[in-house]
Image (cartoon, rainbow, N blue to C red; front, side, top):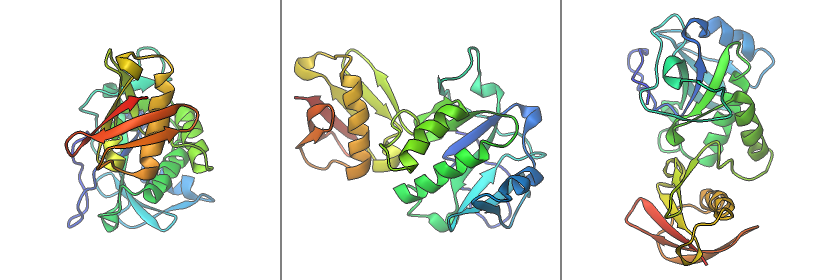
Length: 248
């Protein structure tokens, strides 16, 4: 995750959730945010520009925006999985402008209504000149702004949770493993195929399972669920932070 940035005294830095990636010489300044906010569904609040920091208000919720020029550029210090990005794109070479829920949202920062507002704000900020990619940091994913806007926009308009934008899936011989789901429910899952055989169709099951878990929350006891468009899956907790899922 990005390191801590300078911030106004007395204000705790939130943990960044999303980031817009810029060429280091093309980062926005406070005036760029103020210009973008005209006629948009957010506004710039107090602390604007101090130490590269701005406070953004959107739908009554406050978010911390960090990494603005001319403060020292923020960098990613963990690898990101790229999707729909140009060949050779290196996230580590980019400068980050990050968003995190404000201190006022402590205890509610990970609730879906807050994440909806934050992800919608990211889509709006992607209209800033020079945005090269968007990163969803809990999933360690970087993607094109167009991909993020399409996937998340469908969700914001009542569609399924964007499992391939706000979480990630990795495949192995054992099955599919989620990454970033724990940010929403406190658990990651491993989905194994029927009779231990992983099939290509199980990828669809992993996406459906992500959507179901985000909607229903953590798994604390064994249960069987029916996933629309896929089939039946058996779920059981494995410790406090994992779920074992098996296609039936």
